[in-house]
Each structure stands twice: as structure tokens, then as C-alpha cells.
Amino acid sequence: MSNKSRFIYLDHAATTAVDPRVVEAMLPYFEHSYGNPSSVYRFAGQAQEALNTSRRTVADILGCTPKEIVFTGCGTESDNLAIRGVAWASRERGNHIITTPIEHHAVETTCHQLAEHWGYRLTVVPVDRHGMVDPDDIAQAITDETVLISVMYANNEVGTIEPLAEIGEIARKRGVHLHTDAVQAGGSLDINVDRLNVDLLSLSGHKFYAPKGVGVLYVREGTPLLPIQTGGGQEGRRRAGTENIPYIVGLARALELANDDRESEAQRLAALRDRLIAGVLGAIPDAFLTGHPTQRLPNSASFCFQGIDGEATLLQLDLAGIAASSGSACASGEAEPSHVLTAMGIEPRLALSSLRLTLGRENTAQDVDDVLGVLPDIVRKLRALSPLYPMPVSEA
Amino acid sequence: MYSETLIDHFQNPRNVGVIADPDGYAKIDSPVCGDLMEIYIKVEDDEIADVKYRTFGCAAAIASSSMATEMILGQPLEVAEELTDAKVAEALGGLPEAKVHCSVLAASALHAAIQDYYAKHPQSAKAEA
Image (cartoon, rainbow over all chains, first blue to last red; front, side, top):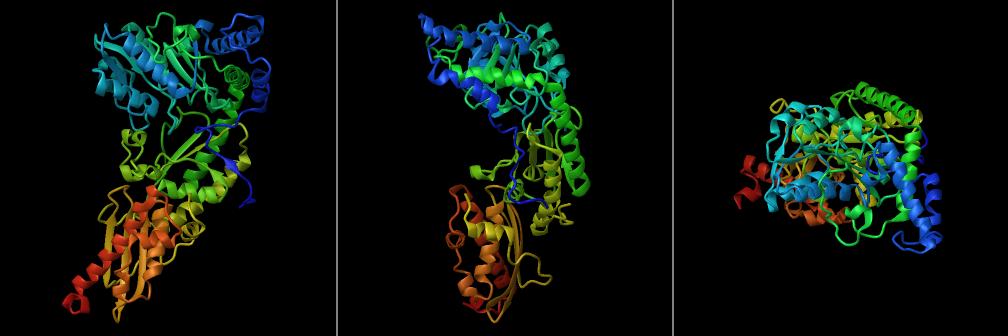
């Protein structure tokens, strides 16, 4: 294998490094143009201008008007604001919410809290074995009481891209608002809100080379929304609190950079992803690709390996200088198999073996080949230790 | 998160394998996280003459299995019976709180294999007592 001291980062779905061009764009707003955009004197105008420009940049990429953009503190906050905000504002009209079993916890937990504590009714439509939602299931779940549908754009664990435009068409016909958690899609897929037919869309800066701690919620004009964080009138009275100007500037710059070469970069990453998938499935027996074979994020490859535990694989990869991720995290003390994988019908023990490799801007074909150089041996070694591989006849 | 000793046992696990005709055998599931350990012992003159295992689980589970078997190999049964999860964890240089159940799995499996040996060998000293 190659030089052991090399570090290969293959966990871009977790977070990304801040692009130096983003840092550069942010820097003036810490020490120099530090004014509060709500202040009236001319000095604050620099911050106001930066805020307006950033909002316009993001709006242009989403294909919406600047006033439909709300800057938030993170993707989780955007999801919370979208779901709770629409649910609260629509309480008179209805109390029914539709979602899927593969959502990020930021959506899942928020929906469940509304159901458990605030009297909302929740319908969780199924997904198929690839993690794909059937728009017909959404259509059938809609009732006169339905106020919100929340379906993620692309899944964080398995990369499956959901048929949002179709779901959005159904939602619009029935007069129901559609929210999408586009946190994993931001920067790599088309996020034009009209093509996607969505009314609310969440983004998180640190997934596309902006810093952690800044997000976006797109809110289509006319969508009822009560703020969940109350106070001043910032962000069109939808999100109180002094705007985090340097981070907002950074997010806008990062989204702009990602958008500039989005299609060519997606193509490059998809080629690396396919090389990785083919290499893993070719070299490792009893390995399975999770998620959709073609409708998946260009940078995401996820697998299950019969008979081994995902965390053990991760640590072996880490010792070989490769940072990756698993759907299972025995570190929480209660290792539940991933809710995403089990919703797709993958049996719990196989789900515990999951490995997710997510590529990014700095990755090369050499990185992929280096992973392929060590992963088959790691799996072989762990399987030699495992009482579950080959499966005992009695359990097969 | 993990000590050097633990990493060493994870990367170079001792006593891995199966024994075709074991004197004692046990297969234990962790109720906490789905980990699974299978352990085989050979007993001669009331001593653990050989021990092998296979474990499905995280690094801490694998290292705990390795360390537990290393600690009891060649030891008299009564010494092996004294092995506790705390001793395994200590020998590994400590375990993160969330991983303590991994050492419990190793100790429980070992004790179950010794019990299996006594059950199958009622003439042994312990069974007569």
C-alpha cells in the first residue's frame, strides 16, 4: 500500500474544510466592517451591504427572491424552523404532518416532538429497499388536515436522491407545503426551488466548504411561518438575533464557488465514486451497496459487509490514515442499527456493518485506489475474527 | 479514545479461532449493542490449556476478547473464574464509559464457557464441591 503517513479524508458528508477563498471573503467582517446591520449610522452600512449581497447571491442560486432567504445558525436550526414554524402557523388549519423514515434527526426528532407533545398527527410513509419514497404514498397520506410534508432531498447515510419535483407537484395540487432538508445536496445538486417544487429548503454551510455555524432556510413567499426564535425583527421577522455577518458572507461565497463548477465537479466525483463502488464490490465478497444504484449523490458510496461491525472497520481505516464514517456508532453506549438502513429493510446486524465513504474537492483517483488497496484486507481480517462469517448453517 | 494496548489487541488479536472438540463452549450476545462472542476452552489438570474465540463487534469488543483470553490462558480454573470485566478493562488501559459493556461481554462469555465445562465434566473438583 501507499505511504502510511498520508491522510485521506473521505467523510465530506460529515463536514468539509473551509475553502481559503471563503476565509478570505469573511475576514474583513471580523475586525473591520464589524457593524451591526440594524444600526443606522453609515459605518454599519458595510455590514448591511454584505448581508444584502450575500442574500442576493444565495437567492440567485436558489432561483428565488432575496426576501425568501432566511439565514440561520445551522442546518438543524433551518429544519426546526421550517417544521415547527409551519406547523405552529398552520395550527388552525390542520394538525397533520407527513414525513419519511430516513430523515436526518433534525427533521425526525422535531416531527416526533410535535406528535408526542403538541397534538400533531404524524404519518411516516415507507421507503423501498433503495431508500426511495414513492410519491403515490405521499399522495395517499394527504388529508384535509395535512399542513406540511417534509422529505429530504438526498439522504446523508446512503446518498439516495428523492423524487422531490413529483412530490412537490402533488403537494401543490393539494395545497400542502413541502419542506426539504437539502443539507447533503447543497453545493452538489441543482437546488433551484421552482424546479424542485418546494416551499421550504434547508442548507448548511459546512457541507459545502463554508464554516460550521451558519445555515439557510428558503421560505417561499406566502408560506405561513411562526419564528421559533423570537426577539428582534431580523431576517424578515422570521429569525431574531443579530446576523452573523462574516459567516453569512462565507456561506454565500462558498455556495457561489460550488455553483460555479457544480456540474463538472459532480461529474468528476461521480466517476471517482463509481470507481470506488466497482472496486469494493469487485474485491470484497458479501459486500452490498446501500442506497440507490444510480439516483444517488455524486460523492457518496455506502456499503454493508456481512459479518463485521462498522466501527471496527472505521478504526482499522483510521489506523491506515483514512477517515470514514459508519451508520452505526456503538460509542453512544446503545448501538442502535441505523434507522435509515433498517427502514430500507436491511436486517439489524447487517446494518451494524455499514461503511460510508463520501468524496470531496481534494480527493483524487489515487485516494480511491489507496482505499481499495487496504479495505479488502481489513474486511478479510475482521471476518476471520467473526463468529458471523461465514454464517453458521443454523443461522444462514 | 483508545489506549495503545487496546489498539494493539485490536490489530493483533491473540487466541483467535475455534477448537474442534472443546471441553467448554459458550456463545454470548451483548444485550446492549448486538455484539456476539463465541469462546472455546480446553482444560487439562484443572488449568485452561487452550482458549480460542471469535467476536463480532467493535474494536473494544475485539480487544476485550483478546485480552480476556490472554489473561486466563494457562491459569488454573479457579483463577480464571476470578476474572472480571473490570480487570479486563484495566488491563486494556481503561475503556471509555460507553464501551464498558464490551469487557462485560468477554468476561461473561468466559464464565459461561467454564460453567459449560463443569456441566459436561461433573467429576471435576468444582462440580463435586
